[in-house]
Length: 248
Ligand code: NAP
Image (cartoon, rainbow, N blue to C red; front, side, top):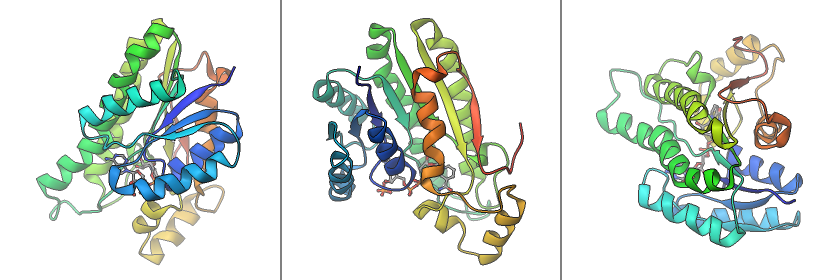
């Protein structure tokens, strides 16, 4: 049976790699990004379609609840049903505490936390009806350690881990698992912005057991595991995918 997944923030970076990874594993996909990124999203969709299988766009700003409801309804209509939601969309605007504004704080929480809540709420009634679902939230190493300039981001990703734990409790009785992945330093546009200082690259390579930074593809296997039936008895977990930086 073909499984169907929604991936948010999928036009580039980790979301794009997850989309390609799931397509390679036979999933049909509804890929999301903000409306302003439609052209890039359509390019990603064209790449995914070359792998075979169905792939449709569902444009939405995940910080907008109406957008989330519409995107999920378009995904259900377009694919027939949804088995998997990957909450990947996220933002990081570096700001030390003395330059952090309420606007940056609110924007970070609106996308990274409220976006996860709103997409989850929009899809869960459908999953409950089918008594099956896999929700995978992309948190961050920042939920474990963080770095200077990321206080708001670390707080938002810690919130995602807490949200994962409690939604796992609420949905478990319906056959729905909820897990999080905490990537370390991954070489995407966000990752590169975070590493503008070359000393930071050297530092992270040194403290990583595998002595290298991550590629978006490094996140795919763990997400695919949580999205699959291989993880049927695993829920409420947050898995570090960081090459060996943080142990818990
Ligand atoms: P990225 O390269 O910046 O890509 C993020 C994607 O999400 C972009 O396509 C972006 O669209 C989209 N997006 C942003 N706001 C959105 C919104 N409101 N609604 C829908 N889509 C939205 O980032 P990434 O590195 O791939 O990160 C993906 C996820 O992994 C994020 O949750 C991030 O926090 C997490 N993460 C990343 C790292 C890392 O080192 N890269 C480490 C740990 C965790 P635009 O192109 O318009 O911005």
